[in-house]
Length: 58
Image (tube, rainbow, N blue to C red; front, side, top):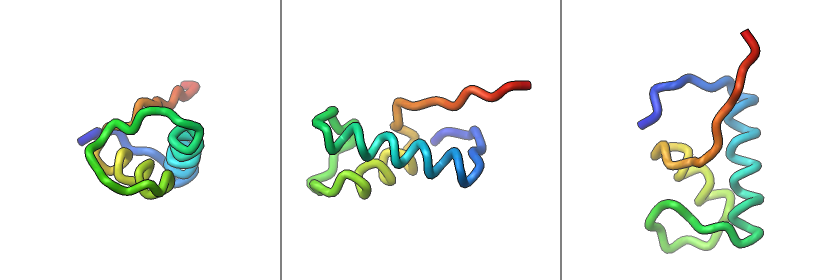
């Protein structure tokens, strides 16, 4: 599990972007029979398998 803490806005943006990628045909990185892209994106995020990172200015 990813130990980095995201704000609720970052989390929403990551899940939304990943859901769009999945709905457009990107491979799913977890083993789940569901076809719902939003559900799959949430599960990937929860399991730390989302291939999206956040860059913050310091």
